[in-house]
Length: 314
Length: 130
Image (cartoon, rainbow over all chains, first blue to last red):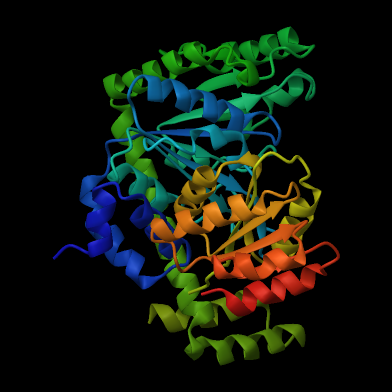
């Protein structure tokens, strides 16, 4: 018997989609049952990851892309992630404000999420949410990361196509050569191309591509956009589609999907293990007493960790 | 299970004064809630659609133009119509005292006027969220 929520999600019912996302975010057991039912119905959506520094125009760009997808008759799910406060656990989720014109469109579902302690630019439940939106029949699922710095690269684990958004004026050519975010793009987008310094930024990213893609079959495209004025969006959409075709042609697509499932599996196990060790009352006393001992230098953290892990692995 | 209270903060109608809404949004954030801020010039339909997709526990409306009897009530009616009757609706802004009982009758649970300490709003939400 299929879970009732799962059934409604497969029919695309917005309230059920929204509810299941909440349950998944809260690690509710009900969500697990529904997720199990949903999985066979996933895999059809093109998952696009969009990352870049804060204020680079990710949300505005997503709004423009979505408008074009809608013109083509494609339905779109959007996951917009903003940071959770390390102090209060609260969050101000403000990406939706740039997308309100999409609010009344039945073919678009937007969900704002807090990072809730994850550091890679995503949030723990994002794998579930991609599957939920995919299963609900969305043709395209767009994941907007938090505004990133240099090292938040988890988006490549979940996206088929990753867009890195850069803006003019953020440093010299050495910045583009650094490891991390500047390595992960399937497509580079230089947004706010009406700003001064855009030619230099484009040239620097292009020279990076020349170095990293030499001898490779596909050269990472570098596009300029002015999202606010809807400029360059058509070309961007064409590149996104052609990247998908490239993935399919080269069998990279399956590899990419396998990578996502691996990341998802690791995340589920991590969550379960952490809950088991740190939330289950059986270990609470043990951990407290170990912490006392570590503080008093009677034991070191490595030995303490072995004591806990030995108990589980037995 | 670690449930977080999710709040939609919206400004229906045409007035452009969003400072109050932003102050409240920040206070709720600092109280550990997830606040979805939708900004200015929202219609009742947009607010309700966002409330559904974001699966919020609370909808907070701010209005300083005097159109609250129409717009607050529109949101409340529409939320109910869409089956979101377990959502706590609260309002703020320039609301004359004599309108408050009428708004409460229409489903706006509480109205917080100028000078309300943010802690009052936080504790009201924590106590009344379903």
